[in-house]
Every structure is written in C-alpha cells, then in structure tokens.
Image 1 (cartoon, rainbow, N blue to C red):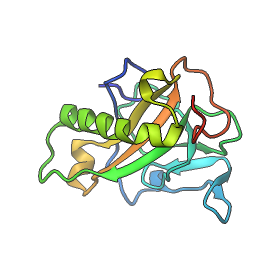
Image 2 (image 1 turned 90 degrees about the vertical axis):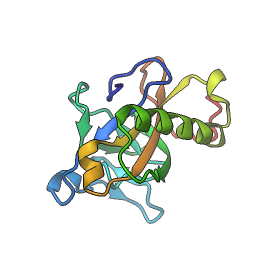
Image 3 (image 1 turned 90 degrees about the horizontal axis):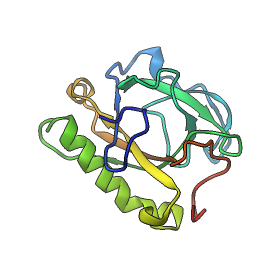
Image 4 (image 1 turned 135 degrees about the vertical axis):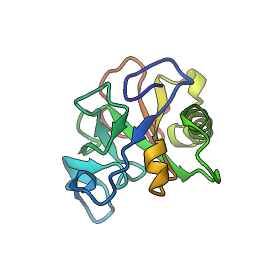
Length: 163
C-alpha cells in the first residue's frame, strides 16, 4: 500500500477514514466565488474539488486520513487534485483491487489534465480511495492527485502545464 508515502508508479492510494459527520471533515479553507482556495486551512477529504492544491499530512505513514491542509495553488504545495469519480462495485473488492482500479482510472484522466502523457511527465499519480471502513459508511469516491516525482513542492496549477 502506498499511503501518502511516495512509492513507485503503479501503487496508489490513501485510504479515507470513515468518520463522516465529525469535525475532521470540515472544510475551513477560504474559497473565492469560483471555488478556488484563496486562504489555507483544513480541507476535509470529502470536500476536495478538482483543482484543489494541498500538502501532505503530518503523519506520512498514516493509511487513513480525514483532512489535509488545503492551500492556494500559487503557493508551494505537495499535491493537486485532477479528477474525481465514484467506483461502482456492488461490494468492497479489497484495498489492492481498489488501488489498482483507481490508479488506472486516474491514469486515464492524467493527460487531459496535464497536457502530457504520464510516461513523459515529471509528475506522479496517486489517489484517495475508500477504505473498508469508509466503504461501510457509503464512501465510493476516488480522488486523483498529482505530485512532483522528485518530491519537490509544486507552485501553480499542473493543469495544462505539460510537466
């Protein structure tokens, strides 16, 4: 499992904790009228939107997360959300299958977002995925994000960047 810890391509996923309704999921970032984050703050895993930039959680070994620090994309940041979708399994297929499916589905969205194919890119793909516990609470969302393969901070959006 990848968790938030960076690993070789093909392994993905950060499980999302199943504590819907707790303060851990509050979004206290400040957004402008277009929905872009303009002031940093806690960004709940279920409040992330395509185009949101965020930093890694303090505990890089955590397999389950509830929120991260959302930041304006013009400021240095670790990651940027580039796609979201729901999985349609009738039952939880297991973490490995969810991670593999998420990675390939994120891969399918990557070139449209970045403007470059993943194989030529300096960016890596990862995803927030349902955990078995969050699945039981109705979580079906995959949130795809990119980060710099050399683990350097990104500044600005990766959308159309060709990175």
